Length: 142
Image (cartoon, rainbow, N blue to C red):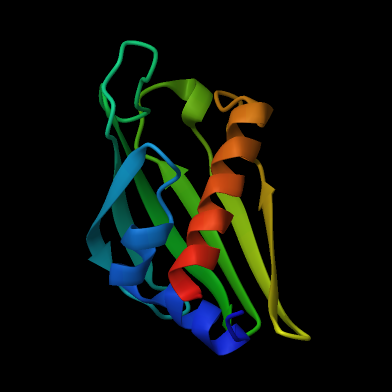
């Protein structure tokens, strides 16, 4: 099991982020990254399978997200505001993602809370994507 410090590093390293954050079926590319409180990042998530049922929010097969770090507490918490680059009003608005880390025997408990998820993202799809991302983070850090 990974320590809170190892998890925090994976949250704040742009190369690590593109390795674990994209949910299953997507790949990531970091376009810009300023890893400090108030700093911003821009990441592209591209669908690997380009079947007709998979539609990106930014383009046909990709989601581009703009993020800003609201709060960084070393080894304990990362709070981000994320917006999709999309012309579709269903994906508009700022989503707040709070990732909390707590040391537990044998490793770290990671919890992610998302607020103001855009209406265009079905709750079951969001839950599945976040579960995939957490599994990727665990595999990446262990």
